[in-house]
Image 1 (cartoon, rainbow, N blue to C red):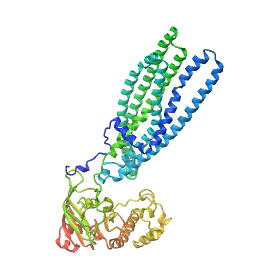
Image 2 (image 1 turned 180 degrees about the vertical axis):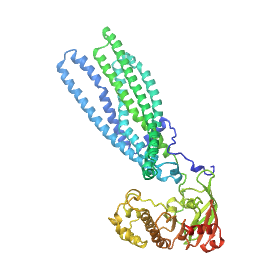
Image 3 (image 1 turned 120 degrees about the vertical axis):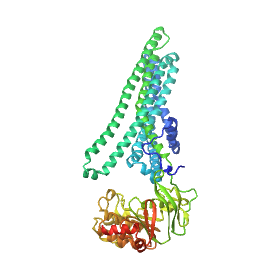
Image 4 (image 1 turned 90 degrees about the horizontal axis):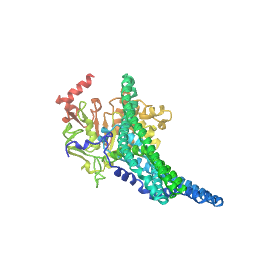
Length: 592
């Protein structure tokens, strides 16, 4: 594999082309756990279809055996038979719709779960390539399209296929010659439907792409609405949205055009079939070789024949939308994660020593972010990593947590290469506090206990007091049970960072990472956090990444990075005496 190539994957805009049979095979695999329901759906469908197509034959019997001969007594008896057939057919159709609808919902649930599990298993580079709006389209809009296929399209297809087969059987049972004459229009039906299918599948693929782009842009701009208003970019945003919307509109109009041509053509073919029956059948009635009841039955059967064809064409809209959605969903599911746990992973380690051995890393190709980086952190040691923006500091954290895999070298934790450990074991070692704390739309308590521990409110309150956030909790309307709203919008940045610190302390992990944890907060909150940091670091291996050099003077070792390499290392005093990069950064910090 070429260096860096594993991070070049499909984006949410990339769609692999699958054959029709491959899509059907994969969709049908989701039915396998529900075989009994599938069998019941097929049985009720066959019963419903059979009782539907037999109706013209019953009308033929009524005409030729009762009405024309004048047998009124037998007529009333036969009407009761016809009524019973209609009733049983309605009951069968009800159960068919019920079973297939429930089956469709179960399959959709399984598919949604597969997509979500797969997205959660992907490495961070996947999310670098794919915008959130497009991934949401896969999980919601595309699954909804398949839901329509399973719950209504599939029902209609099964039923209509049974109806068509039954109609052909009844036709040949009534009169072989007239059946052959009527079915001469089937090549026209096939050519029209085949051409339509090829055109419409391409259009639906384009519609799905346009919809995904529109959704991604819309979500991104709603999230960034404050910046758009602040920078007075509303006109620019509207112009971009207009372009995406017009692209979707063009594809939709093209879809309407093809349907506008297809349906009249099918109606015309139906008229041709009726004309054939009237001309050929009428001549045979005049000759005495065909009964009137048979001809009436054929007119009814022909109308019934084109009814499922027309309905299948209408459902083709659903089917093609589902095919396009299926391609996008399967493209996502076939995009295998590049960062995974080994088959026989290490699940325990003896210590928390961290070693980087000649590590090289690039996010893309050979645009190296880290170049031959080597260092060691002893168990319980506290180190800091400093350097200018873009030096590669945060990339070290990303590699430690295996959000990405290195290109060369080794990373060792507790004496084992991290690629030998399960992702759960590795990431379970680390508590992390970043510069942009993310809060979910839940309560303060739930945001602190995200790792699933069952800590009681008293324990969490005690943690908040220890980090100096007790007054902050008391100021909240419902204390720890106060909702923070989306992305913690009810809290200030400093308050969100306090919650993030409390989360790290509650998780009680063996290794602590502070990644620019005080970069964007006010002086008062920083002083509170500075008092909390020694508590967090106590009895833990700690890595601190910082721009504010005043926050790292008491660590055991400071690593100074520049252009992806470690240029200097030592204590604060040693580095100041060296009068190199660190001393320059320190003097700049004091001036600032």
